[in-house]
Amino acid sequence: MPSPAGGAGRYAPSPSGELHLGNLRTALLAWLFARTTGRRFVLRIDDLDRVRPGAAERQLDDLAAIGIDWDGPVLRQSGRLPAYATAIDELTDAGRTYECFCTRREIQQAATAPHAPMGAYPGTCRELTDAQRAARRAEGRSPALRLRAEVDDYEITDLCHGRYRGAVDDLVLRRGDGIPAYNLTVVIDDAAQGVDQVVRGDDLLASTPRQAYLGELLEIPAPTYAHVPLVLNGEGKRLAKRDGAVSLSDQRALGNTPEDVVSAIAGSLGYTARTTAELREVFDPARVPEKPWILEPIGLFQPDRCP
Image (tube, rainbow, N blue to C red):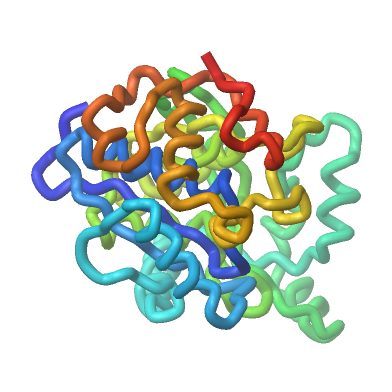
């Protein structure tokens, strides 16, 4: 996985609260992938939604505490609105967008109709007339802006999953409240930061073909993807704050150090290391476990480790 000159990996948390051990593990994997393939590593705060005061600063502190460093300033999406507007204007000028007045309930009902693709927007507003759009505005509906997709699916190549073909629908580019949507912002921001390698949780794999297709329309090359297994709780569900002592501050309160946390994460990946520097020396991107890490917080440092 050699990197072109100027290539970078990244981590982009939402400042909605503390990072839990699953977040920290994914961040560490993204850092390891980047650093062991000659790339820069950059950070971005996805702060267009769900912002908790002080959360971003605590997240950055926790990343630094476990030994993750980064290159250049931290990018914040809230300062990037003109860039998103420019991309939307480009797509609109090319005839690739349309207004959508559907409510969430209407979309859910349409998605459960017979023969509807799972989770895909059915194009209800795609061919509305001017009069129909005016009527919906008169009802007080604020339209979202959707991409007029010209394909039903799109194929990507993922380092962990191989060739993957996923559905592409008329995804939202700008929400009804005027906020740019994630599938747009992630493509624009990765390009702006020179990101050519995206390592993130495999729960996001299904949305990646949409982003790669949108990037193609904007003449942005798709990065190298690696969707890594998540950390799950003892019930096999995605790890969450409610599962107990799952944040770095929780572990510190129990007397565990950041080095202990790194050691546990390293163990879940099949390595023995207590610092990120030690882990970097032995990490092999081709050896990422295929299975999730099942985490029992009480037994954090004796986990059921992936092969």
